[in-house]
Length: 179
Image 1 (tube, helix red, strand yellow):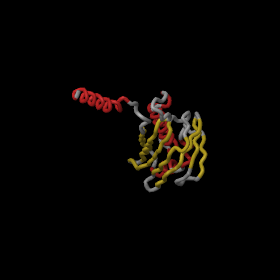
Image 2 (cartoon, helix red, strand yellow):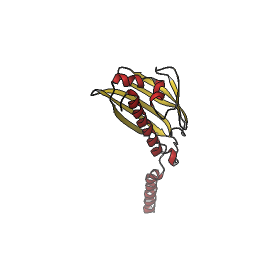
Image 3 (spheres, one colour):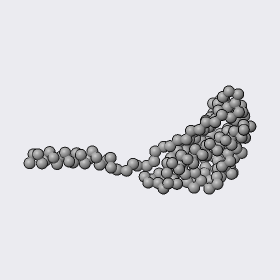
Image 4 (cartoon, one colour):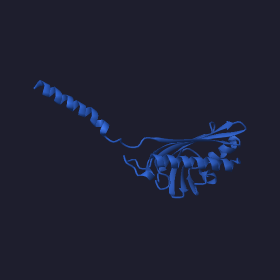
């Protein structure tokens, strides 16, 4: 009888230990995209383009229209029109001394960009006779359920955000006078 009780307790303990391992993961994990590009233009020239919160439409080829409220100061908002719709971003910080801006997604549109939230930073630094621009983003996939469809999963979010950043950097380089 004592052996049966011990065996029963052992089975219960094993079930309790193993049960959490069989549960599916919950929710998405944060993803990131980090890109850097050398631009053969002075940091001041590049910063002038980057620091204009509404100016992204002049150098980012994926942005077809920009509407800005609040200018170029923290608290400003911009609506970016992309090929498949609009997203709204808010400017969190402008640090002219460090030549760095930080902003975040305020209103998502998974058709336009398959993410549900992001924060991003663009920083301009001197590099040789030109500049180095680092653009980084931290984000979550568009579908935050446990089993997202392929077009809204982590891989889709990473690919879309990386492409958006790379094309932005190339456009910035072209606009700043680099080839």
